[in-house]
Length: 341
Image 1: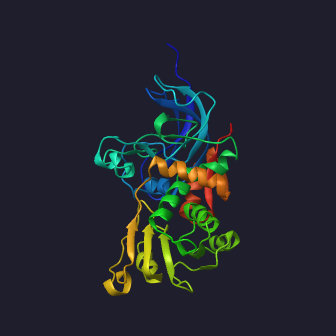
Image 2 (image 1 turned 180 degrees about the horizontal axis):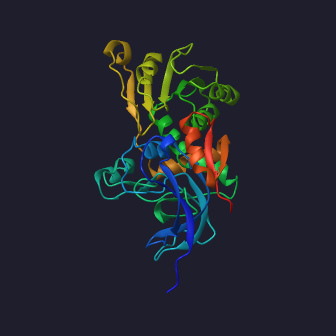
Image 3 (image 1 turned 135 degrees about the vertical axis):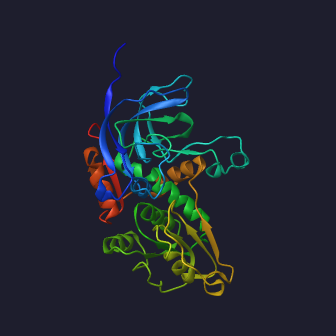
């Protein structure tokens, strides 16, 4: 019996502040695909704020020493038994949603993002901060040969979640959209909204992010808690800052909708009914995504020319990429590139 080939990977060892070094480089056996699964050689993997939440313990670990990363672009190198959807050499994407039961009332209603038995890449199973990853073929995305894998990677979570948040925000045609926070997901969502005729207002703490928003076509960009110059039809809070929820609600016009896009958020302060919610203002959350969301986003991104503004890190610098994200030093999307890509 021969030894299985080895690979480099990063694991969350002991969750805690980035300064404590929760992300540790290890060597592991290359995983083997099971029935219905694909083995993927990773070309690029986006670094998501959810990876940061997992590393720092904001999200409780589901298993010890998990490989994070759920914005993966790679090539199929092997297929598990009974796998027919792809062939070796295909370019595929691995995203956050990894599996659902397919049988509960949520799955049957086309709302698999609410499945109580759902599992997630980089949380319930190892993800893309590694040279190889395994994914159920039914939850992998077929990807085009262009553009570069670094440009594609952020679409697989930041893009998908931003798209779902935009749908949940119920922006009317040509409406005024406010974005609170302007990181990886927001800057992709901004391009989607602008391409479809929206008027964009961005509130964010970072000066580089405000510059990027204006370069992309925002009408206004101000500080995180600054009131926009006009009432908004819809707004999305991307920043994991609960104190921005009443700020964003106050900025809505009557009948407006606010969507909260994060998986984790600090405590939301007490709000007044008349000041924040009256006049039929709606407050909605976003929970994961469906595969249909991902397929629709990928089609739209190609058709509308949505491109991620990226800061690229070598695979060996995953810990530095996570630290830069935590410190607010990343404008746009941080992406790890494999040395073999």
